[in-house]
Image (cartoon, rainbow, N blue to C red):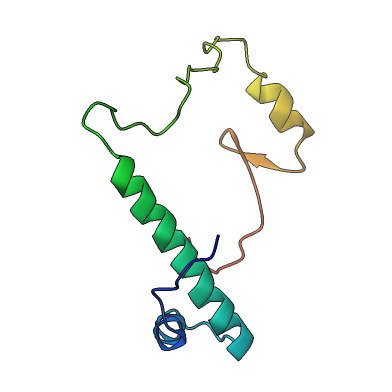
Length: 101
């Protein structure tokens, strides 16, 4: 099946310039052809759209696979700070690097 591109190399080049993308001549030709194929497919899909068919993002219904949150005991703060090289006011103490308070 052959498609007629509705996009010219000049249009692709303009879009590439707007997106600050540098493309070779071969890439311009290929992308113009690819965009034409995509456009043809979109047109075919538009032909079969019916009010009898509801819009959907997934053909198979999705279900939540997350587990329920479960509260568990955490690590003791004093125990963690005891392993730190330095602690102050219940927090890790680290060297100042930006000269700010």
